[in-house]
Length: 358
Image 1 (cartoon, helix red, strand yellow):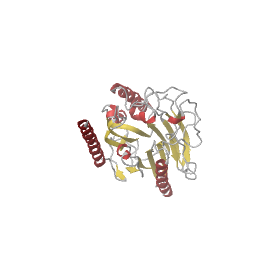
Image 2 (cartoon, one colour):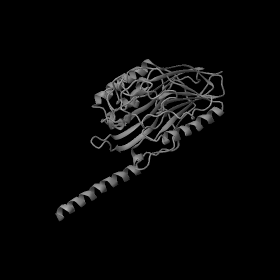
Image 3 (cartoon, helix red, strand yellow):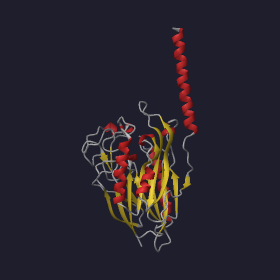
């Protein structure tokens, strides 16, 4: 018995040692970008327009790293899967995604959850595929998820991840930068979570001394208290109000991970149990929207679906978390969500058309 006890103790010490070494390695190598990083273009065609026209079109789409199509679920949302079944799934999803982007070109395309190198997408460089498809756009990429090894779920870990957000533009920007959102999860959870950020690109407007400031964002999910999301929103609010005070035109779009104002939890029919909704989906704070600013989203079509199981219309919870916020000096012309049935992503793309007030 004494020998068995010694074996158990030494085994436990060995396991704890390995765990400690892994956490130390992950802490030392944690991705910790500066608060503001200047971005260089990763694709730069020669025929870009120098000025932004008065009428502007933008498409936003969270690609779900081409791994969350309608046949998939996700372990963080109550499902069991950490990655698609095989590489072919990702390849087929990317083929459909890039085909849609090629057929629905706008002045600007802002994307979220685009993998550059990740085990969950079998090493496929989705950033490169998007660039190859949209050759007449200048492209910018900012990492918001870079981890050497994500150890969960224990039965099938996600492994390495390098993913981020993209801006593609037909107009030559004056500058581009990655802004880090404040706040993070506590240690050691923060070692394996996204480092949230937004991309700011600035453009010269035709016959104007002011700039168009385009913001592509992807706010936090899974903070059940909502405190992290609120902190990010308050940081964003200070930034955009400062830009608007300069006289600039500010257009914010992307995945807000907050349900749009005026959209209730029961806006669309579903049968998803509440336990898969609470803490993941929550409403935008009613007191947050700056005075005079306008929300732009399509209330008739959901932009996201729950991932606790593969998608079945009318069963999965669906709502609207993808859309735009416009400064008072921008006129909303139209906004439309494309109902793709979540065929290749757990989000639907949203297209906006606005006009600069002269």
